[in-house]
Image 1 (cartoon, rainbow, N blue to C red):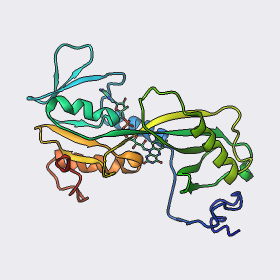
Image 2 (cartoon, rainbow, N blue to C red):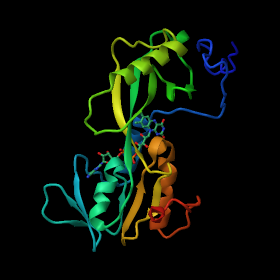
Image 3 (cartoon, helix red, strand yellow):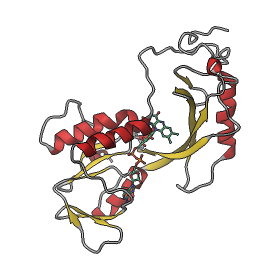
Amino acid sequence: MPRPHARSSPACAPNPAGGALHLPDATAGNCRLFAQLLRQGTQAGGVQFAFGTRVARLASPPMGVQVHGESGTRSFDAVVLCAGAASAALLRPLGLRLPLAAVYGYSVSAPLREELHAPVASVVDSQEQITITRLGQRVRITGGAELGGQDAAHHVPTLQQLYRTMNEWFPGGALLSSGLQVWRGARPTLPDGAPVVGASGVPGLWLNTGHGAGGWALASGCARAVADLIGQRNPDINLDGLGIQRF
Ligand SMILES: Cc1cc2nc3c(=O)[nH]c(=O)nc-3n(C[C@H](O)[C@H](O)[C@H](O)COP(=O)(O)OP(=O)(O)OC[C@H]3O[C@@H](n4cnc5c(N)ncnc54)[C@H](O)[C@@H]3O)c2cc1C
C-alpha cells in the first residue's frame, strides 16, 4: 500500500485509502494558545476585555449594546458583531436576517502514548472528515457534523468514530483511555459556506461572523479587513460576495 505521506507522518499505518495528498506548506497551530497570547498582547496595548458579559440586545441609533443585567445601553462608535452561532438572534430585532446554522463537531485532545507511533503533523481523512493533528505532547482528533442545540449531549457514536479513526491511522500513538479533553463546538455556517464580513447597513454596526469550519484560519484576515473598513482604509483582500446583502 503506498504511503506518500510517510515523510510527514512516518508513524502512519498503511493508508486505508491507498493514497494521500502531501501539503508541505500546511501547518497546524494551537488556537487556544493563540487566543491567550493575543489577549495578553492586546491587553498590554490597552485593549479592555469584558469577560463573562452577555450582550442582551444591540441598540440603534445611536449604536450601542445593552448588557444583560443593565438597564441602559453602552454607546460605541463602532460595534463588530462576531457572536458566532448567536449572531443571527442578535441581528433579528434590527430587521437583519442571517440564515445561520450551527453545525456542531467534536475535538478530542489526547495525551501522547508513544511518540514514535504518533503523527508529527496533520493528517486529514477526507472520507471520514476527521483530522488528526499533533499538538506538542498531545494529539487532537476532530470531526463530526451534527445539528441541534448547544447543550445537546455528546453523540457517543461520533466520538467512537474519532477514536476508531485515530487507531486506524496511528495505532498506539495516543492514550485514549484517560486524560482526554472532549470539546463539542459550533461551526457557525451560512448557506454558501462563506462568512459575512463588512458593513451591516445599520450605521456603526459591522459584521464578522459565519466562518463555518474555518473560523480560526480566517480570523486574523477577516479582523484585519473589518478594522480597515472601520478605519476607512481599503482592505487588502477583496470582500466582494461577503456582504449580508447576498441573503
Ligand atoms: C470540532 C471543530 C473543529 C474545528 N477546527 C477548525 C480548524 O481546524 N480551523 C479553523 O479555522 N476552524 C476550525 N473550526 C471552526 C471554528 O472553531 C469556528 O469557525 C470559529 O470558532 C468561529 O468563531 P467565532 O468567533 O465566529 O464564533 P465562536 O467561536 O462561537 O465565538 C463566539 C463568541 O461569542 C460569544 N457570544 C455569543 N453570544 C453572545 C452574547 N449575547 N454576548 C456576549 N458574547 C456572546 C460566545 O460566548 C463565544 O465566545 C472548528 C470547529 C469545530 C467545532
